[in-house]
Amino acid sequence: MSESRPGIDVPDARGRTGLDRVGRDLSGNPSVIVRDVELIAAAWHVLRRTTYDYRRRDGGWTREQRETYDRGDGATVLLYDPHRRTVLLTRQFRFPVYVNGHPDGLFLETAAGLLDGDDPAAAIRREAAEELGVTIGELTPVFRVWTSPGSVTERLHCFAAPYSVESRTGAGGGLADDGEDIEAVELSFDEALAMVDSGEIADAKTIMLLQWAALKGTLDTDR
Image (cartoon, rainbow, N blue to C red; front, side, top):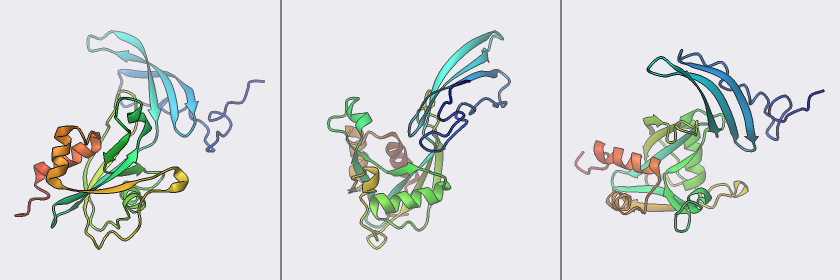
């Protein structure tokens, strides 16, 4: 009798099965034939190794293996006050950046989180309330991006939304039960852009949204 494998034929700690089936039925690219999917790890998120045949541009076929980290899709929002020309960001400890050279791991970034089964707009409204205590009204979709396409499957839904003193209706700070300890940081738009230049803001999604706002003139007072 074969051994039961959590996440494959019996539920893992999050109640999931069939995690080794993801990607086996891909058919959108005739130059890619998936041969095998191995479940490497399934803790909170999922690490897989996929073996596939790939037809190169010269017509020859090669066999490749890639590991993919699946944490689900996410959403983020740039909160801006068009009247005071400010943006509202989060500061929290991020161990992955700390272990890879960030001085203290306290990272400035836009509010963000995983979808967790919600649609992107609902998810980012939830995250803005939890992290920054902001009740979002009007919400503008900006773009959807993959930020690390060589290894991470996550697609990030990026939004922008105005906020005001009145819309900061909650305490924020994140969910203590999830280990979150989030500080709200309000900056002038010009100061935030200068911090991108200085490297004090080094988060990709935050930089992209700040640059989008600069290109669109979102916080220009004469608009």
